[in-house]
Image 1 (tube, rainbow, N blue to C red):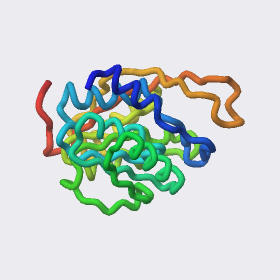
Image 2: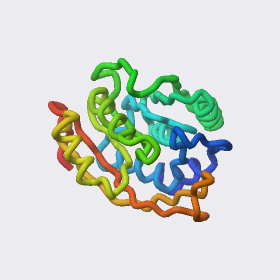
Image 3: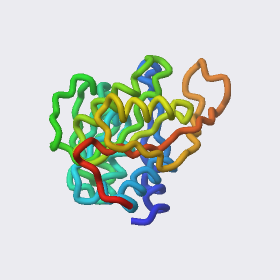
Image 4: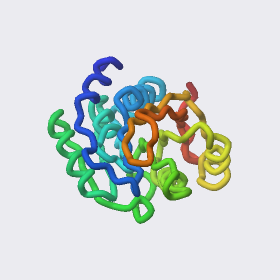
Length: 213
């Protein structure tokens, strides 16, 4: 599937109608989501025929993208039942067989080797400090191959240090810097659109170093 086709299909997904501020529910736009998964597959081979989990899946955009790119099995995980319902509708619309699990990521009891690749757009931690690091810590315990995640560029040094020194990553690479065009979602947003610089990271767990590219 070509990048433009993937972005077009993701652009047709339903988004949050009443996002919850306490969960930092922001849509992962089709521009970023398509490039994130397209890069994971075409540069590293981390999607097609792999078991892929979407942590904090929200309306399911990243998981749907993985399914469209040929993942063997996709699992979406979110603490919010309304998000899971919306994600399930989006998957059905594109005739994708995706499993959804309601769970707080911090309570996930999975062990390594269950999932090959984890993709996620975690909360940036603006409402609950450290929320993004909670997601990354669990992801690096669960993924057997790679973790792809979005984090604010302003936190780059902190993310890299935590991944390598605390969270069992053998490598932590910023693949590219992207502009996250955040629509005016909540009352405290003063502008119609907020432009945030985010890094697309690829992390590899220790003892599971992927092929050099």
